[in-house]
Length: 275
Image (tube, rainbow, N blue to C red):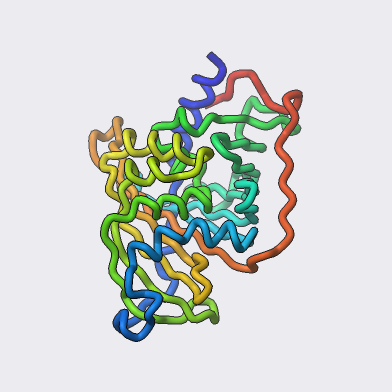
């Protein structure tokens, strides 16, 4: 019962917070002939998650944006990720209130295979306790709910790429990158994803308004993701319409030391979370 309560509350929070770093200044022109490695965009993107595992770890910043009732809501996060262990840590800042001030402490999120742990989750949760959510039980697989898309799940979603084009070379944050644009299928991605991500992507395939996810991704010359932007769509049951969510993840400082430890059972809150 407590888990169902957690799920419902977290999903509600997720629908209220979403972001996009949209601008990012990444555009380019060119053809695949300029870069032989870009000659097969779909195959290149299918290898992106594996390349992150080879890189080991990185720092990450995230943003998520969507419009709610005519108001654009944005959440930003920052942290690091260990791709070999599929463990990450983000500090997520909720949007400001209408007066322009932040009335929420940042939420600390630990990302793990099949689970999301949150501290400072909300009223009613002791300050020293974590809230745990099974990501496979969330209708979006936690691609949106936590206010940030798990960086490794974002990469493995590219395993579902059906069509993609090479848009040329450009520069991002001082690094030469290759720009690809395409569409991934959540159902297909779930079939090829790692065990820790598979069920979450399968849940998202059923929960979103469409399993088709348009994306833009920028890879450096080692094939590592430097920036990826997904555009998700889900049905808003309250307003009976489709809501578009833009989720952007930036990866940098590859190989940085990352030490993430998951909470002990005694530190996980089992009570009801206030709305």
